[in-house]
Amino acid sequence: MAKAKIQFPRGFLWGTATAAHQVEGNNTNNNWHAWEEAGKTADKSGLACDWWGGRWREDFDRAAETGQNAHRLSVEWSRIQPARDRWDENALDHYREMLRGLRERNMTALVTLHHFTNPLWVEETGAWENDETPELFAEFVRRTVDALKEYANLWVTINEPNVYAYSGYVEGTFPPGKKDLNIAFKVMVNLVRGHALAYKAIHEVQREARVGMAHNYHAIAPKKPKSPLDAWVAKAQSSVFNDLFPNAAQDGKVKFLWKNVNLPEAAGTQDFIGLNYYTRAYAAFNVKMAGELFGKLSFLEDADLSATGFISNDPAGFGEALKWANSFGKQIIITENGVEDAPDEMRPRYLAQHIQELWRAVNFGIPIKGYFHWSLVDNFEWERGWTQRFGLWELDVKTQKRRKRKSAAFYEEICKTNSLSSEMVKKYCPEVIEKIFPD
Image (cartoon, rainbow, N blue to C red; front, side):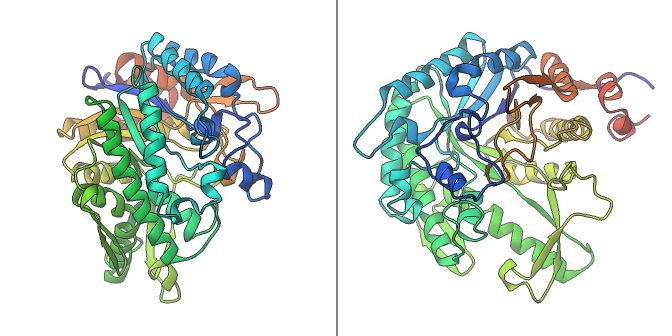
């Protein structure tokens, strides 16, 4: 076949994403450590990837040497403010050193300020159920950004607030493990308030800052496209899960099912849309599932599933997510996209097909600034522990040794050439060459 290539704009950011608790190790002063100790997770994080012990240096080297020009990481609130009346300057110095390390490697930093974890002292007072927490968070954000502003001007206030609220207060798989829609809504309102206060604090400290949230977009389609009931369920579930937080940051209105709250201070508090996309599910109407808005979610029977069946390779859903993100009229950053795949058999084709979908969006004029793959190295996957492996580099948890996967070499070629070519696809995932570069 003839050689072909799809090229991305000059200056496009190519990187990977990580989160503090998932990679640092020995994070013992937050709600997730307590959750692990209570036996609520498949494993314990332990040393994780030992970044707090200094292994971030070798992982940043790996990223830089393989062409990545950016990295998304998070800071741990419980390290920086271990108690209500105590700040740890050594922790801030540690993060300053990490960000300086990115700059020395000519990599742009994207810093997340809240990625699922709360200090124990915050958790013990009700966390985001407590109306005081948004102000406490804003205070932490102001202090942290002031300390780190020399090395970063791209900030995510809160990662996946919809997942935090749903998993912790509806599904009950995240701490505090509650299942109460009324409490969930209160948490959502306070997360919006916390984001809005943090947004304003960041801009007061750093006028040139670019600030957004990282939104998890779960694409949902009707199981039977011609079924009005399936279509209604898919639309309702998508609206409830996907739209609340970005809409609130757009117009200051928090809407969840039958509940509405006006927060005018939240209007216009996104400089960019952070988009996390992994998969698409299909909704079938089920009258017995009122708690799930009468819809049962599943993958298609012929779905291309990841190693544990957690993710379906559905790049068209990514295209849908990109159009959704574009509807807010802001610049877009793909803050997470990836697949758990310890054998590294599915990841190359997942990567190729999603990068193609990304290019289509860029080619149609959607303003996308960069792409952060989840993740750089296998890390601790929350309640699923070490049972899922998302890394471009494989991690041996016991020895801390890293091994470069085939998909890391594939991503290296994409990053270094700022493109995806037919030669790359033929080399790393020939099974999808005709889908991406048909004759």
